[in-house]
Amino acid sequence: MVKTRRTYTPEFKTEAVKLVTAQGYSVAKAARSLDICANLIRNGKQTLEVQGEHAFPGRGKRSSFEEEHCRLHAENKHLSAERNILKKAAAFFAREATGSTALSTNMRQDACYSLGEKKGKRVFS
Image (cartoon, rainbow, N blue to C red):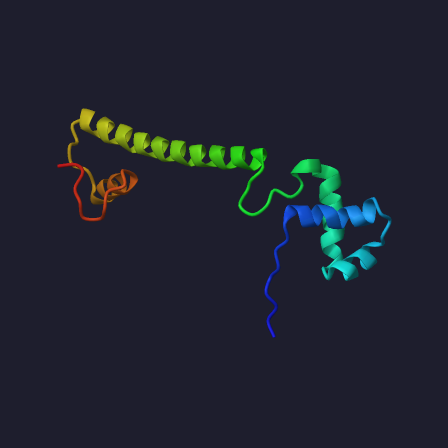
């Protein structure tokens, strides 16, 4: 029989940890009385000590550090794509300045993919 994963509210987790810290229950006894795994209380206690009121953000809620990390990661990805496009444009114009006007098929396809064009569409004529 497959067990379904149970989810607990931040309030429930906080109260479970308080049974151990404030009321003096053992971790095992508190876990049995609440019908939860003892590791949930142990991990919750550790998390609550380290992070305080931000210990249990809930589902889908990120901490400010995680939000900043995701934003910077997206910005880095965007800037890398811009840099690659500019590199290819610089190579194109360098070839054009030397008198070689024909682009190789591979370079033309790479430029199309970098600009987000679909395969088969022409960007350069």
